[in-house]
Image 1 (cartoon, protein in one colour):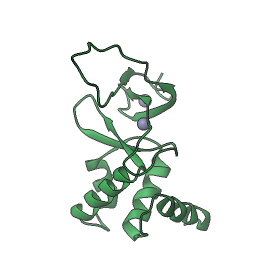
Image 2: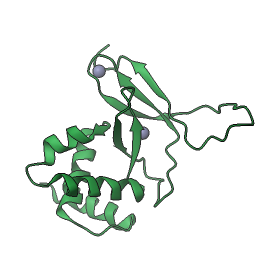
Image 3: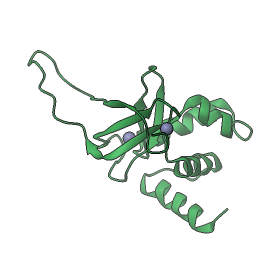
Length: 142
Ligand SMILES: [Zn+2]
Ligand SMILES: [Zn+2]
């Protein structure tokens, strides 16, 4: 494995106040390689030879809490996770972007450049989280 990549992983963990573990390293490398939102089963399929489910689950949680990854809601209701663009911190996410799901290949990606527009809610409602998933065809499948 590239020493540069490993150093990058160590820097990311340190920046977000997480201790280095082999599982955190491998999961972070996986997210950096894939560049798409991953589900629990997808992560397990790749890393379950080396780590048990509980460890994977805890690692995923620690990443979300510390602002390394954010949750992406899929249209099937299942959660996926994708790496944050960099401005996120512990318990403070700023991922205000649209997500895109390809109806052909099924991949879900962050559209970092596309911000979620302001939504006018009736004053009786308090918004705490806004998710926007656009379905269509990705550049690879058009
Ligand atoms: Zn596609
Ligand atoms: Zn995203």
